[in-house]
Length: 387
Image (cartoon, rainbow, N blue to C red; front, side, top):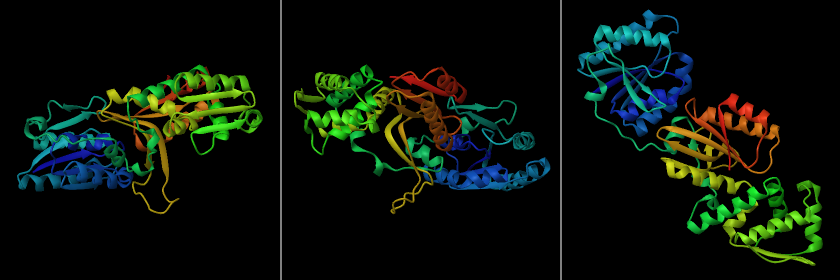
């Protein structure tokens, strides 16, 4: 039986990396009360459900009494040795005082110490502590790690039932159409969001639009959705026609008559930023182990039947490379400095909850956001990309 004592910390990946890579039968976390209380439930659930760990224990120890820590762990080690179990120390997370205790006990019992470099997903076996080696003695445990498991490890759950079908990439023609929408949006980047709002007001249930010019001009002049000159609107309709996204029969001269290529593209256009999310997904997917678009995360890890109970966050694009996730927020159109920073704060909040300290944060925009917002992004460790 393989037993690992781990210095329990706040970061989930530090707590579970050993069990993700090696077949561990029993995991013993040694940590302080506040950390154990906050993290024990989700960590135990993840290890037993996905890593094959049969027994997970938590030893709550005082934060300033080395002797007490030594006595607590020493007693359990004695029991494990009497049973003939293989014992290892993991110092990937936790507090320095527990690290000191493990170092003392390693020398006392000849128990090897290791840790994981999470960013590199790499095992480090500490020299001079123990004559044995977990990498040579314990079978590998290659679990199929994906975004569902990552979010579960952080205490949430991905609600796939809320995924919007039109945000699924279907075929090469669809990819070409999304690229075409992207070209129109980039050409008219400062007016794209207003354009989509005007189309929402003009378009009915079906694919075809047949409106009087008077009606359309009235909608374009409505300040609630932002004023738009008829010349700009007409130009963007023509560009959509040239990209094959719309069929345009008449612009002006008494009527506006046009139609969308299909219902899916209509929905993408109606939700102004969807094209940017799809373009970002297409950029990330080929180099990722798991990539998804329009991901809805339930905060408490339990999906309820009754509406209004669940607290949900939607991530525009969520990517996993190895064991490190990237949370991506996409903002189309022209953003003020304040709007850009608000998007950063929202991204920071959801990443702190479900990503952890190793997660990457990316803000994708279609326009420059200005020097002040860019400086704030650097301060927050958020990468800004412009597509």
